[in-house]
Amino acid sequence: MKKLALHWQILIGMVGGIVFGFILIQTAWGSEEVLVKTIKESTRIVHENVDGQLVAVEQVQPEQEVYMTKARHFVSRWIEPFGKIFVNLLKLIAVPLILASLIKGISDLKDIAKFRNMGLRTIVIYIATTIIAITIGLLMVNAFEPGSGISQETIDNLSATYSGNENIQGKLNTAAQQKDAGPLQALVDMVPSNAVEAMSDNSLMLQVIFFAIFLGISMLLIGEKAAKPLKKFFDSLNDVVLKMVDLIMLTAPYAVFALLATVVVTSDDPEVLLALLYYALTVVGGLILMIVVYCLIFSLYVKKSPFWFLSQIAPAQLLAFSTSSSAATLPVTMERVEEHMGVEKDVASFVLPVGATINMDGTSLYQAVAAVFVCQALGIDVSLSAQLTIVLTALLASIGSAAVPGAGMVMLVIVLESIDFPSDLLPVALALIFAVDRPLDMLRTTVNVTGDATVASVVAKSLGKFGNPDVQDWDDHLDEVTS
Image 1 (cartoon, rainbow, N blue to C red):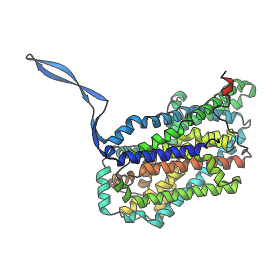
Image 2 (image 1 turned 45 degrees about the vertical axis):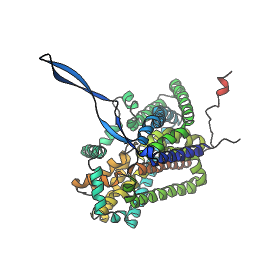
Image 3 (image 1 turned 90 degrees about the horizontal axis):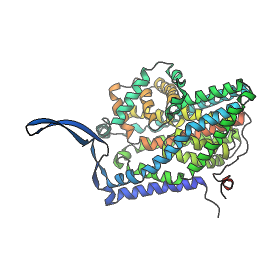
């Protein structure tokens, strides 16, 4: 019997998780609220009167008590941890994979000029696709005007529900910090002061990339003989980490079941989501158009079927949708592009990590739609010059946007401020889109990952490095270690 393809296994897991989550929340058992005391506790010293004397007594108190549905409580205790373990495993190998594959790829080039050509093509194509994405977003939001259908009552309800939300306040604070940074702060942040510290934090991916490129180029400059021992180490490390990817992917169908079930039971009020449906559909329509653009680029330049492209990259797309993180999905994206599509390692190991960090086409498209949408909803006129400003700011913001869930909202604040959006209305603006941000984040992350794979394919084709697939299974060498 032929084994079911991985993307179908993952898709079944996703559908199963969604159905399971809806069954839980629709039952009377799942809807019933229960008081949940958090495990985390705090202590305080109080003075009590004992036999006429004040005695210091340590009291242990729960930090907080919350009400939640039984469904949410059950999933958070018994389902969600499996999804978290899977994502943690992907994050665990992300830095070693980037380090090993990038150093191996650069040291294999033999010629620094080839690396320069590859780098320039990568950056130019990423910028071009980002501008296309922003333009599509602006065309969609101006054509359909989703903000004009939002009533004042809906705005008031959303503001009352979300404007005091801690997450929203956190996004505003983060955006304020980024705005106060100097124009060259991005370059400063790219260079690590401590390589080990950079490798200990997945959010510092650009610093890891910088160190890996610096080390790889230095290996080229000391000559092949002197670099050989170190090169053999990174070659071996790269093979080991890719095998870890294969092993982790065996659990992917079960992990996405857990991740999607968690998303369903923790989603917001359906009535709130319905009020923002028109806006959400506008974003989704733009993201689908962007996927079509990628397929056209791939078909016209790489000269292969776009359906073949989508089938090969599907597992990475589905994981991006489930995790909302292109950084966490990076190991799988690299494995699919290298082994299943035939992009040579020296191209994939550079283009994909850089793309996961600076290429945010889906996020840029979302920012364009969201910025104009909130202006439409609040009755603020957005002129042509303001929309051109959105294009430029969203382009720059996408380069600095961290490859983690929710970073798009931070960049949205910066985009809104660039068009002189009233600062007192920023909490209201974020409240307007906060309810549907998570599902849209899942979709735009899928677009980001698809864009990375497309650009890697185009760059590889332009350099004559798009070869034949060489799929490695997790048990290829199992017979060597079993009796």
